[in-house]
Image 1 (cartoon, rainbow, N blue to C red):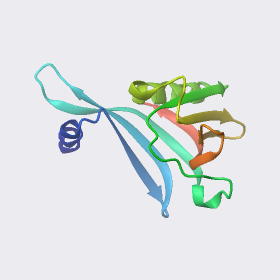
Image 2 (tube, one colour; image 1 turned 90 degrees about the vertical axis):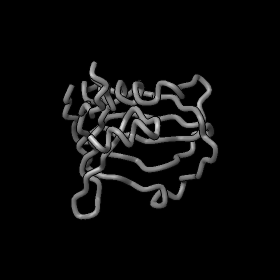
Image 3 (cartoon, rainbow, N blue to C red; image 1 turned 30 degrees about the vertical axis):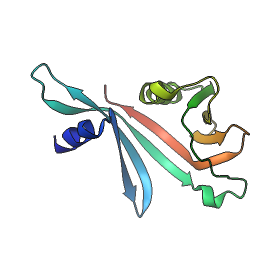
Image 4 (cartoon, rainbow, N blue to C red; image 1 turned 180 degrees about the vertical axis):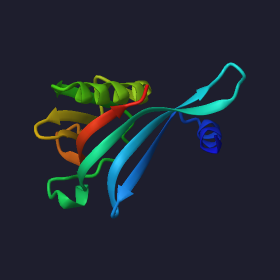
Length: 140
């Protein structure tokens, strides 16, 4: 409840809570800040993303930094599974206010053994971490 109040005070509609195992991310819980008919704030658990691994930008020699990014797009053309499409839907919902056809950042979703989520700048250079996702536990 306190987290919902603080998120609302800061103007956030969504909260992501990262859990770790041995210092490495193991899951990302996604919550939406909601308000009931009485005006009470609560957190609605939308999904838990189970993470297999993360490659940090400092571990990628091709990675670059991006400054002042204010728009993004989501490329899910390489999604096959319902989990991958669900992640694309969640990202679209979370970032709907800054989605653009001329983005500063592109979020790419693809699949092989795992669902891979990575970010690139307008020049196609990687920015930020690359996440390998095992599965998504839908909670809606």
